Amino acid sequence: MSQKTTQIDSKYAQQHRRWILIDAKDAVLGRLATKAANLLRGKGKRFFTPSIDCGDFVIVTNAKNIKVTGDKENQKFYFRHSGYPKGAKVIPFKQQMEKDSRKVISMAVKRMLPETLLRQHQMRRLKVYPGADHPHTAQKVEAPSD
Image (cartoon, rainbow, N blue to C red; front, top):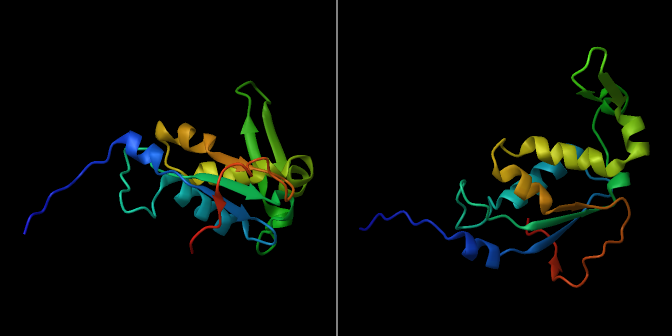
């Protein structure tokens, strides 16, 4: 029995990319983010290699209709710091959803991807839209195969 480990070529991975549409209407934020992160990495593909960017394009629609469980709607907040003294900014979840609901999903997905050089390339393939419409109808968009 031969036990060979094969490495795929990055060009092969790029040729086999799909466009996958995820509807976020009444979906839980964490579960949607893990599904999107796994699709961006290509974890469900048989030729998955952690060091090669072999994931798919992911389109998330209806970002404004995302749900969170428990009392996270009142307790969850987003923190950032400018680096200067008193440069801390704390934004509650509700306020961030009113301001830009796309950022909530993109931050959740980004934080579920490993902190490697591939993360920024994988995040470029994530497209998040607040409504049901998206401009990617020319691509052959398909539903996730769960």
